[in-house]
Image (cartoon, rainbow, N blue to C red; front, side, top):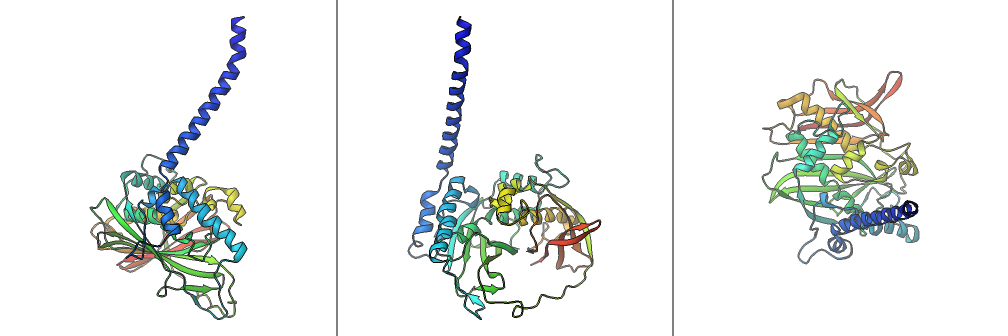
Length: 385
């Protein structure tokens, strides 16, 4: 009789216990995220003017500290609000006939930047080659790669500028088409650096192209007054223009150049999850194949900077102390142009130009061969400052 009663009561008690456990986990996670919610700082940035005597908004948290609560705030107050406003009153971005440039409002933003050992470890895992993704370290991270990590970690400042209500461009549909990074200092003893991100202004107008407008986002990283890193990130945002094929500048004539392979880059469907932890870019096209298809892609898309990071890993490994940006060098730069989306999974071959000069060297990442058309997905140049 007693055994029968226990048997009848056990499922109910177990169900109730699991419900309470699940509710407790949800509340704990929610409390943790809210404790990392930078509500006051984001509200000042979105809804007030910069402090008196300054032209820049000042955030009190580093890009690596952005939480899911912060991302929800940016989604609602930035992306959703801009999308709704565009449907009701328009985006406010008007391109007149024969107009070649558009002056965007100037926005300035400063914040601290912190690079810890955990960030270096995550980067090492993300750029590991030969199917080693997710291993303990994935190899050592050299001076060049540590600097590129700094660029990856601060790339999220681009999103903070694009979603601001005063910038009349929609973050939806925008594409990062090319970047230029200049690394002016190889190391810094300061545990905390300062980032200054800015966009727009009369001195830096957006350019009208056939598919929309292109504008540059600039991010400077400083240690006190010393420039460590300067980034120029070019974004293409689609909008109606009056340019046609006949009025657009003809594409440059391709030149034949000999390249040598430095290794293979394997991007799996799980690769974006590793890079998201490094840079904080959780764009739907990178995290979900279903959501990527809603935006017109055939599947989940690789992060462009992730591919470049893997290319630099191969480049530094093969060239050693002779690599641009190696220890002892005064500074270096890298340019990259993203030619087409990289639908996952994809296998790329990293190549560098043959017979290149000492000061700069061209590189590219391509896929194809074995009966299929070879296509260049990312290309660029790397050199000494």
